[in-house]
Amino acid sequence: MTEEHLQATISLRGVLFAPCGDVLVVRRASDGGWELPGGRLGPHEDAPDGVRREITEETGIDARVGRPIHAVSWRNEGDSGRFAVYYWCEAPDGLDVHDGDDPVTLSHEHTDYAWLPPESASDRLSDVQERAVDVATEVYEP
Image (cartoon, rainbow, N blue to C red; front, side, top):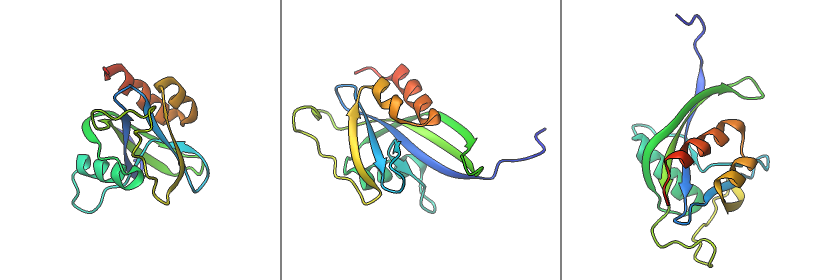
């Protein structure tokens, strides 16, 4: 039995694939770091609904939220507990992010974004989020 239990902030994030197989990453306004879109649940909100709402709020994309593909706990640099669940998500069919058909509109929480092949997206992300992209890529079939 574990003697010390993790007290953690919980977040839900989407590994959001474009039809071409690229993954969306967004740059935080707070510290310039890159992350997957997502955030925290509202009171009494179902998890998939919360992921969809957060992606829409942060990017303007009405994503289809699939199954959870990765869950992990850790301590950040400030030794605060974190727990995250990552969902496989997809952008609307017909979206061509490389042909000017890119509907991303960022919220005030982010300053930049990029649609990248999964391996390039992973290079910009924390180890925890990199693992989520790796797992999502294993189950994604464009």
